[in-house]
Image (tube, rainbow, N blue to C red; front, side):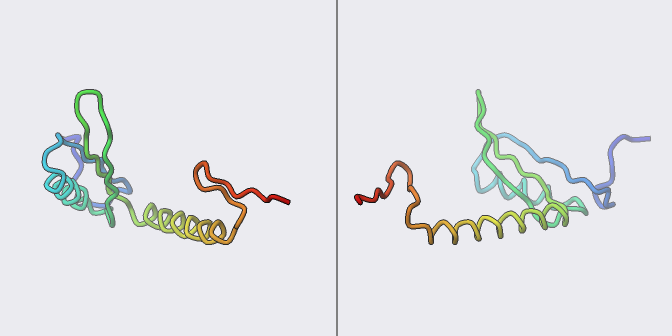
Length: 101
């Protein structure tokens, strides 16, 4: 009996896919396709992880539930950005507007 699971059968988890840094376009494409092979993956999150000897492009498949949470976070950030844009007293970096009254 094998410890390896069949990726075509949903199990509620998605694998993390990592590999050596090659052409970023090729590596991202390979990672995305590998992550999407899992039956639970509906989207893929990819990032560059700096390392001591080499950087890595890491991709992880997202389940439907995880993607829903990502959508909620993106909507919250968008709402915060709208509120921040309306706040004239906000600071941008080290530049702050100071009232001279």
